Figure 1 (cartoon, rainbow, N blue to C red):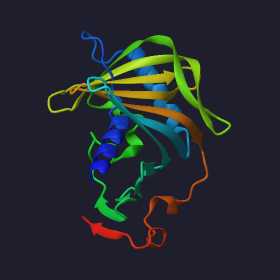
Figure 2: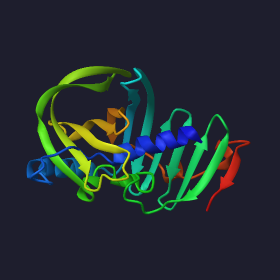
Figure 3: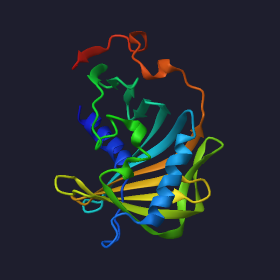
Figure 4: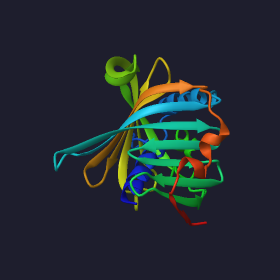
Length: 234
């Protein structure tokens, strides 16, 4: 389940989106205005489908690995598909499917504010508790977008906010950089900077708000996973 742990870290990265900030002002009001707008924009959606590229980069070892994935959100429900692994939840139960092992693991959703796996609906508002933040500035950034089925890069005016944990001891990361497209108030890039020198970079390539999705998308149907071994950890 090593890949599952990596994906969990990636999700947590999406969740722990919280940047480096001014030492004299733990909660920069200018940054908060931007983060609040991102949150309110996202909360206005009934559902959200997003495609993204997830990159694990170790600059010291000069390694870089990128995988593409999809995320679906509907109220307290979610589904993530990344690198042969699916994670989905109806808000009470979480199922994790490994395609390589043809294995389903069932567990209960736990209320853990530091892990988006426990409540992925907090991806866009975790900054409200346990993090400091500061507006780094406004700049032109190359961001990925999907056009005609292909991912391309475009230069957009972005607001860059740095987040960091109020209690850094015991955390594996020290800073999360959020790159937010000013025009849409949508997060384009989440760069989680780890203490070991590696980065996990999530680049959201497409947002599809209010996409049609049924509740069946977020529950386990044995017929869709023939022959899968089931491990019930509840």
